[in-house]
Length: 132
Image (cartoon, rainbow, N blue to C red; front, side):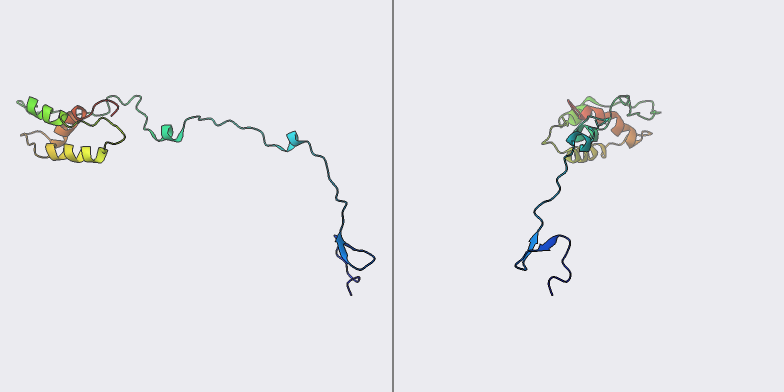
C-alpha cells in the first residue's frame, strides 16, 4: 500500500503519484561571514628559491688542511689543465660530469707528505667560474 508510509520528502497527490515538495526553504547568508580569512604566507620565496642552498656566511667554507711539506707548489700547467674545463653552472652543463673529470685529473697527482684531499680542495675553486 503506497499510502501507508510516505517518506517525509514526498506527498501523495490525489491520483496517488509521488511528487516532491516544491517549496524549499531558502535562507539568505551573508557571504562575508562564510568566507575564510585571507592568511598571508610568512615566506614569499618560490620553490626554486627555497631549494637553493644558502651561501651567505659560507664564502670561506672550503678550508684546505695545512700542508707540512717544505717544497710543495702547484705547477702552472696543472692549474691550466683544471681551468681548461671549468664549470659555469649553466642549465645544460652536467655538474656530475664536471666532478668526474676533476677527480680523474686530481687522482693522478702524488706529492710526498701532501694529502690528495688537500690538493683537490686547493684546486677545485679554479675549476669553477661564473654562477658556479
